[in-house]
Structures are given as C-alpha cells and as structure tokens.
Image (cartoon, rainbow, N blue to C red):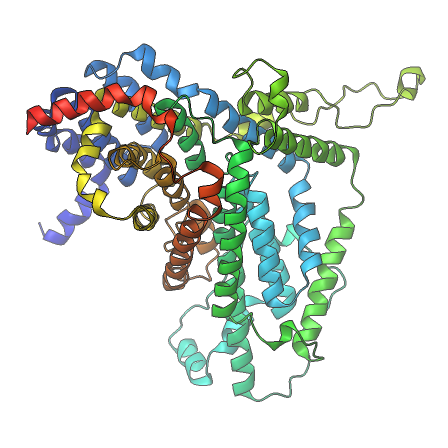
Length: 598
C-alpha cells in the first residue's frame, strides 16, 4: 500500500489515535515529577492536547476532571464537582439570558441600523460604524451572534454601494484574464451568502442597474479593485471588532470569567475585580484599540482618503446616497419602538447600571445596604433576568378585564424558557467549569507552584517587558486553540510566576486574559473569524496580513493600559496584602518539595 494512502487513512482516524495514544505517551510524567504534581500535570497535558486538537468535543474534555482527579487521588469528587457551577457561571448565565431576550425582540438590529445611519455612508465612516456597533453588541451578546447578525447588514449595504459582487469581480479582471477563464471553463467566483441575507435587508424601489459608463476599461478596473478592497475591509472589521468588544465586560467573553473565577479561588480576599471595576479598566482599552484598529483597516483597505472631509458629486457619491436611503428605509420598516422593545431596553439598562454601581470602588456602591460579602454580580444578574420570564411583552390594559369581547389568550412574557434554553451555549458553561476544576487541582496539588519555580529565570525580565511577552505569547497561542482553553491552561502558571517574582498578580493576569481574545490572524482562530471567512470573499493571506498588525496594536494597547490607568486603578505597583493569607503555606510546601527534588 502506498504511503500516501496510509497517510490519508491515518488522517481520517487522527482523533481516535490521539485519544488512544496520548495517555500512553505521557505516562512518564507520572514518574518523573513529585507524585501529586506529576498526576495533575498528566491530566492537564492530556486536556490541553484534547482541547487543541479537538479530539474530543471541548465540553466533553472539560468534564474529564470529574473522572480523573478523584480516581488519580488528586482531588475528591465533592471538591471537583461544585467547580462546574460556581458564582461566576451564574453571572455568565444571566448575561446570556439577557442577550437572548435582546435577540428575541430584534433590539440589536435596531441599534445596528441606527448607529450606521448616524456615522454616514462613506467607506471609512461605515467601517467605523460597523466596528463600533459590533463591539458594543459583543459586550452583551456573544461574539459569534454579533458577527452573524452584522455580516448580512454589511453585505446589503455593500451591494447598494457597489452592486453585485460577482459583477465587481468580473470588472477587476483584465480582458485577457476573463477570456482565459471563459475558455478554460473555470467557474466564476461567487459569494456564499449568509442565510437569509436578502430577506434581512431589502431595498424597495432602488434602481442599482448600471448606467452607461463612459470611463475607460482601465479606469473601470481600477475603481472596481478599490471597491473590492473596501468590501474586504467591511467583512474583516466585523469579527475583529466583536473580539475586541467582548473584552470590555466581564460577561462579554469566557476568559474574563475564568479570570474572576480563578482570582477568587487563589485569592479569596481580593475584591478589586468586579463588573464595574473591570468595565472602568477595559472599556477605555477597548476604545483605544478600536480606534487604532479602525485606522489600520481603513488605511489598508482604501477607506482613508480626502472624501472623508470633502463632498464630491460623482458616481461614488450617488452610490453613497443609495446606501443611505436603503438604511433609512430599513430603519423605517422597523416602525416605532413597541412595548416589548421598550421593556427590554429598560431591563437591559437596569442590568448594566446595577452591575456597574454595585461596588465600583471609586464611590460607595448600593451593596452597602446588604450584609457585607453576601450580594455579588451573579445575584444582581439573576434577579434582573428572572423578571424577564414573567414581565408581559404586551402593554397591560385594565380595559381587557371589563371587555367581554376581548380575546382571552394567555399573555406572552418577554422571554420563554424554551428560547433561553435554546440560546444558551451550555457547552461553554461546562468549559468554564472544567477550567475552574483544573485551576483548583493545580493549586491544591502544588503543580502551579512547581511550574512557577521552574520559571524563575523570567524574574530577570522587567515586569513591563514581561507584560508584553505574556500578552504576545497568549495572543499567538490562541490563534490555534480556543481562547477559553488557552487561559485555563496558562493562568495558574502565570499566577505562580507573579508570586515568584513578587509582582502584583493582577499585573500579569489581566494582560494574559485580554491577550487571549486577540486572535486575528487565522480563520480558525475564533468562530467570528470563521464566519467572515465563510463569506467566500476573504483569503487567508488577507487575515494574516491584517491580523498580524492587529496583534501588535493589541499588545501595545494592553501594555499602555496596564502601565497607566491600570496601575492607578488596581495599585499594581505594590505587592498586595490579599496575596499572603492563602498562599504562604502553599509556597512553603512547594519550596520544600523543590528543595527535595533538587
């Protein structure tokens, strides 16, 4: 049998081979390290490999601690199992339920069209509008849902600006290329439209047929190439902005919740990070990175030019007028805000305000009215979203009670449990739980301290440079692995590294967490990247070229934030008192074990 045939067959069963062979290959770990640390590292390496290769579904891999930690004698089941639904998971769940109610009544679509109509229709401003809208929505909705909702809007606007994509691509070809393709029978390239793209945004009464064009062939080709570049800029800015926006709130993306969960596990006395304080730090960071990202994407894809400041009366201006009319028409079709949308808007604002003001640190929050330490962000979130399941979606009327002719249909609440159940990604909740269980095992077994001891050479690196290195490393690693799995694997090690070099743990933990969301270079890096790539117009080299600079801008933005307002907010220049109570004994035992092994 040929080698190529064998290799193809092996590739077909690669996942099964990984599952069968990996436990055997990594067996030496059990014998080359101290007993408990070796067993924990064995499980961590297996889970990391399964997560990166997706040999098992991510959620199934996340449940392995329930099987392996008790059977290997690392942690008892009564400690492992509660990690799967701790307080942080309830905060995440409440954010997801609120997002599903916003999607149920189409409030996100109204917000998107309104913002786009405000920023204008010039390509650079529209790219900015797309990025602002996507980032704002992804603060509350999932990054994937935001991208899936915004891309059809972008495509419809682009078609009103530039016409059909297939026609545009044909115009970009030289006559020789087009004739050659026709002779060789090559199929024309088509855009794989997202579902219901045409139904989502429709243009009535808009004539986008091409008028008689008096330009030369070269001028037409040059203009079409410019339009194609702008089209790419539109498509690529949406997933990037969604990933950036998710970092601004604790519930925006899973790594943020992993941070708060592991912070409470390692340092129970640390109360510096909550919804309000995280937003006060991460929202300005998001704005800085968003502006830098917009400038780069607009520069790269032709949106930055003199048309931003001067109005011209040409074909581009006519296309912009058509796009403006289309957006205004689609917003008008939504009609006035109905009772359900108004109610969801009210509860959404209340949800955000209560989370921000519970304990914002710089002023006294409303949590002082309750017993200290009893009310958390999770309590606030669950209270608000519980109301959605019984608050009516139609305006209540006293007249209905006294009108025998009125229909006696049951009232419909703002959100049904079936809708919430279908919208919540339960696999992510299991993934979070698996991360918390792994972190608990790393802490209890001494593995994190053992790894931290072997990272001692990094103590020579200045902390500011270490921040950039940590962010850069995790931003690169997460290009190939889930951002949640990445932070689960590395955060315990980063905590121990900070303790070894006597640096405030938050100084390393926060940039590591944010860096895990900066995956811009590959289609497989994040689901939003994959959705944009599936549109059929982006190429891998487009994402690599754009994403590489985006990663650099992200690393610089995080470094700026950590060394300016981050230092002031979290007192990062001092070694905090809340580190000592829970970690002194762990460090003593880990140092003793290191001394005995050496």
